[in-house]
Length: 402
Image 1: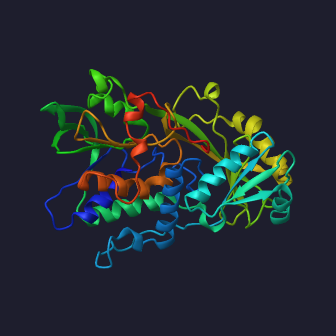
Image 2: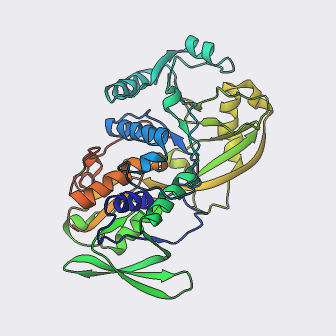
Image 3: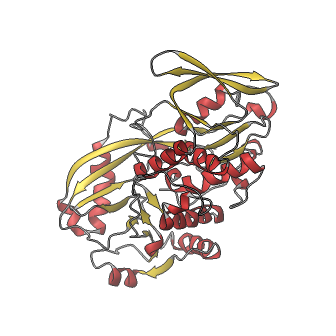
């Protein structure tokens, strides 16, 4: 979100005296939620705004890299990486108990302009001959509008283009803010070599992933009075991704399939590899955020039985590797925090996307640039994701979290 916003702001302020600095404690992005994600892109959400964000991402990826430009006269950074949008779709399956939710979500998607398609169990079997539909009464399929892409490449594209247009990337970690006129105006940054640097700014965007709640506390959000008593409800939550090898598994027609249990899998490349996983229930959450600690029992007990039931070939798979990543998890309602703080007028937030941040990056970064530069959302109205819902104790729930 930080690099996307930096790109869109600099793209719109070229030739003007408008500086942008991105403080990045992990320039290699080895622990970034972005680079450790499975890179999915979909319109299959239950909120109109999330569907519209997904449509923006589809169009952005379809026209990349030209969609990084605001006009034909804008120059692109040389050697931008290929994002490799794989248009194999998402397939959400529903049991009889969840069929009405799938139909309701599909209605929202259709109203928003998505081209998702409802399918019966028989239609699913006809299209995907490897799929076991036991216990499944319906599915919703996104076709070529959905799929996955290279998250590292997209992050690098935003960073390279932002830098090309003059953004400054600062390797360090913010550990304090100083206020002036009641608002944060100076950040104290501990640099990679251990030295300290003070950075003055006019506007602050908190886009620190799972650390956004902590950064908010440093800026005074959650420690003061009135609206400032309410913290940014974002923290790290660990998720596992497993990479099984199964040469006889579903082939080129394999979408990113989401089982009614929440277990998902998709094909990865052409070498018989797959990615799979499942988000835990609240009482099953891992008790740490150490990315080196990977629970293989979770695969054996929760994931493997489900994918082997859906595709018989997975009964004989072999796990090649696995990794863990931390969601920037919004524990209030699992949706993004997008907008300006109601009391700190120079503090903006883009965080808490709970597993779908990378695909929402293009649209949200553009929206934040519009809000910062023009005072309001122009391309998409994302005001429902504002901080006010936490103050008013209102939840904006998304049914299709994976």
